[in-house]
Amino acid sequence: MDVENTTKFEDKSTHPNPPKRRRRRRKTICLLVTALLLLLGLILLILALTVFKAKRPVTSVNSVSLRDFDLSFDSARFRVLINVTLDASLQVTNPNRVGFRYTQSSALLKYRGDVVGEVPIPAGKIGARQTRDMNITLTIMADRLLSNSNLYSDAVSGTLPFSTYTRISGHVRILFKIHVVSYTNCDFAVDVMRSSLANQTCHYKTKL
Image (tube, rainbow, N blue to C red; front, top):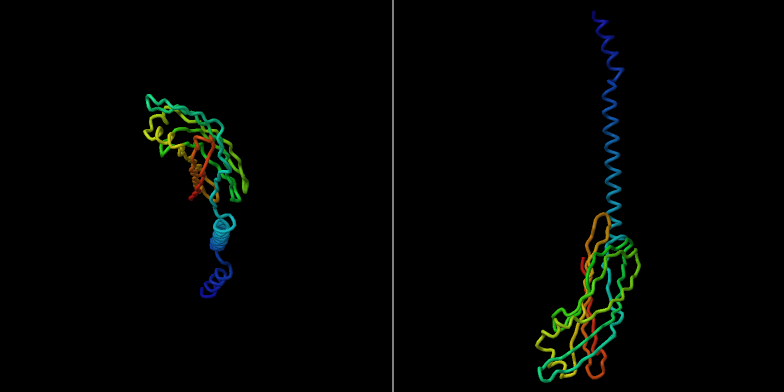
């Protein structure tokens, strides 16, 4: 009896249980896969924060020119009859290594803070490290302008203060969507006597 028991014990020790081996292999494979995924994620994160880091698109105004300008006085009613049309050349530069998609927006023409003209800017996409030119025409909505109480006195003084305002909003996708907004504001004056633009200054602002 003693000999038989000893033999059975030795057989169990020399032949490990196969299910235990399979469980060990599975654990090892799972650990390796997890480590590789973590390493890949770390590499992608480093690239997203360095090489592919999101940068702000830059909107600039190349020129603003006066296409049409007509002005006449109605002295009896202290009114001004006016027609103004402006041509503006914008430029949007995407410095990112991925495309920039922007939604539909508008370019506004303002007189002393009041919107007196508006033109839509259709949605679109700018490729990686590319620049897109946008030519727009802004025409005054006379009814909005005539309601401003400063118009007559400004016209008599010979200078009409205007400004253009453009806001372009969109996103770049680097691992996930990153929203970007670019603002452009240009102040200028219309010289009534010379029918020309003067004192033009532009300000630019972008944010993520």
